[in-house]
Image (tube, rainbow, N blue to C red; front, side, top):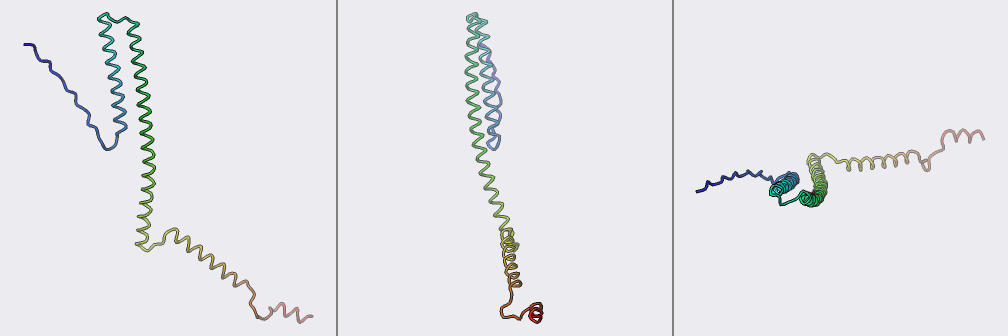
Length: 159
């Protein structure tokens, strides 16, 4: 009875669903490409030992595999760039939304404490300046029906 071959199981790396997704995908892709290249080299060595493949055939096969690997690498890079662009746009939208939520929370807290907002202070300042200009206008305008000033009386008396 032949002895059983004992197989060693490799432990899989746990895939975290929260965060690190693109890094895990990229590492997995690089690992798969490396394994494919290693398998190709093993197959070529076996063919060379058997003598069924000539050096030129082996070189041609290796070039074909390298071309396929390069095309696959470019495809994966393009996919990763697309995913990264989607994540960046999503992050920008989320950042804007979080800014709005924070502003609303601050405004609510200020209102609860009866503290005026920046907009309200600006509006009040504008209104005070407007009223100040009106008051200054009243001070500068001559009064109707008032008597002549002393300088006018002196000139009238001299004439």
